[in-house]
Amino acid sequence: MQVFHDTQVPLGSQGASVAMGNFDGVHLGHRSVIDLARRDGAPLGVITFEPHPRSYFAPHSAPFRLMNSTTRLHRLDKLGVDVVYELPFDAALAGLSPEAFGGQILRDGLGIRHLVVGTDFRFGKGRAGDVDTLRQLGGEMGFDVTAAPLLTEGDAPVSSTAIRAALSDGDPARAAAMLGHWHRIDGPVEHGFKRGRELGFPTANISMEGLHLPRFGIYAVLVDVLDGPHQGSYHGCASLGSRPTFGDHAPNLEVFLMDFSGDLYGAQMSTALVAFQRPELKFDGIDPLIAQMGQDVQQARKILTDP
Image 1 (tube, rainbow, N blue to C red):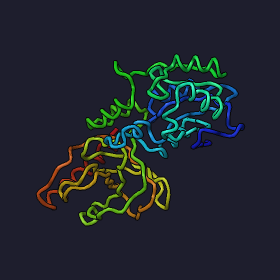
Image 2: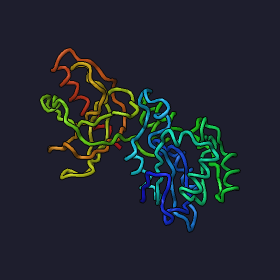
Image 3: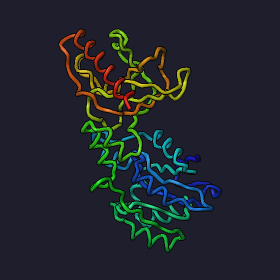
Image 4: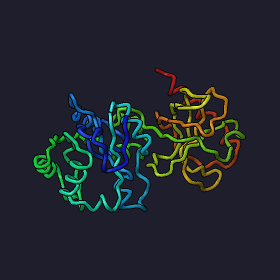
């Protein structure tokens, strides 16, 4: 998969049929948009933005992203996308009128052949452009436009907002029904306080910086170590939160891998939230914490191994 981080690409990388959007989570609704962009004889492309426009316009808002750019690219690659145009969302791009975006970016910069967007897609300065605007521009500039209907789950549309709500409720199964896969938290294993090792439950620590925070608590998880000598898949039990027993800390994910021994520092790890077990608690001492951790691991093992 080719990835471009510019609004101008070589002629040899133009002519794609593309889906355009933020694609945060790459959920089932996003996949339906991408599937409509598949055309015989044309590379399958995706136009997306980095940083997320919401981060640009509201830089001090609470973290909301379901995945970072690296994870998004990995998901798009697995869907068979040939080329991703990850456009830098900055003042210059944000200030383009719909007409300038169509001419400078879609026609001249990327040379797209066909464009698919969701029916609610807006673009251009002040969100002035919509699907009808795109159709008009496409007719003038030489590309076709398809509007993909919103996908629903039950009576509600599948959306990144709905997935965030499910995760905030501690319902990863509901989130997974909209994502089409378990919600995953990816990143390198970082050094922590190493308390888990002292308690008999060594953990791999993953930063949650910049990501939406699911409900704090204990989860049964599936873990993929993506590189290094311990590459492979494992069952695990994870704590997501701020570790109130030991003070006030930045939220992170601490993952105990079952039936594992080894050093994972620096390895890339992907952790799937499968089931919420209990809320985060503050314990009066180490002994009750250790006892509860033992119960949590046994419960997670049962959740992950029972049919």
